[in-house]
Length: 159
Image (cartoon, rainbow, N blue to C red):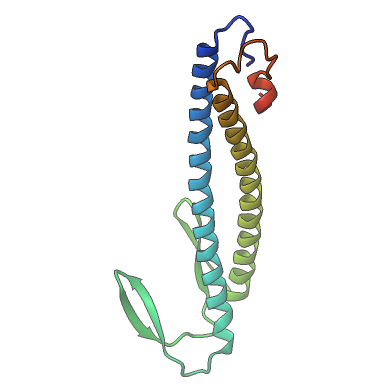
């Protein structure tokens, strides 16, 4: 979406400001998704480590089991007991502990991949925001648009 050469500097600034606002909105949404992925990763890692830690417990070890609302039950785990794990959409299955640990490890890998991809998209969008911000600042300078042969918005943000 290039800005026509016949457009006035004021129109170009308005278009660039609208584009900048849209970019900032997208960036904010991506940052929220990133926070969700980081929290999900921490939750999955905590579950995986807790299940792996059961192997190091002695038979009569007592645990505190959180039930929500800062309430806990005292209990001793049966090391051979299956584990309930959610698969999504409210579906929960019962699997052997090693299989659940494996499933959690796979989920962690997928979360890490998604986080890396999202971080790359955030960097690209942030660069666009910075470039467009500099372009708008340059346009606001007196005489910056008179015969300067400046770059178009497309040149700056790669649209």
